Length: 160
Image (cartoon, rainbow, N blue to C red; front, side, top):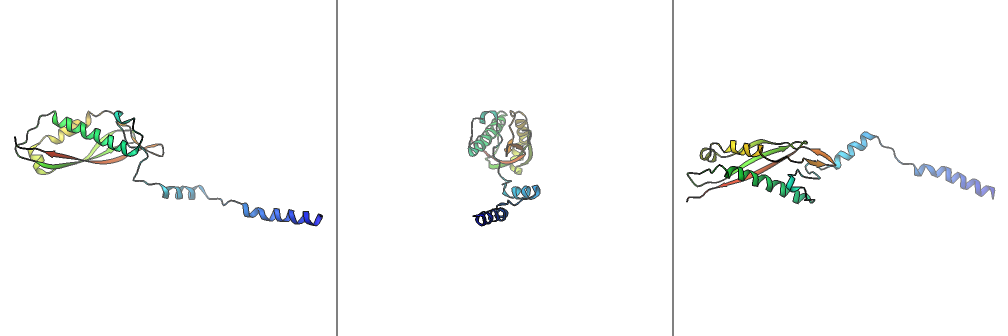
């Protein structure tokens, strides 16, 4: 009986090494975690106050883009611009939204035809951006992050 107890104790003591967990350094854990993060996607898109009710990412993005597009088109239409010739072209706006929610126009590309037809269009678009209501920043893992967007705006005119 004592022999059986001794064998059980030896088995228990020697088998503990099989239950040890591997210890990894915090740096290794950090590096592995960085590999799993999709840096091109956010958990929550930037939002205007009218977009706060959306919870799905696709709805948040669509609401943000539509709100921005609607506001800029309204700012443009407030100036009653008249084109001399037919246009069917696209302006490309590049935005950065800071981690504080500040919207900044970083690049504006338009053809020379649009620039000639509407020489003050760039100023109107910048004024429209300046009158936007505050934006909530995008979030990644609960942390506000800077994001960039590209917004194409179609300029289409017709002869009356």
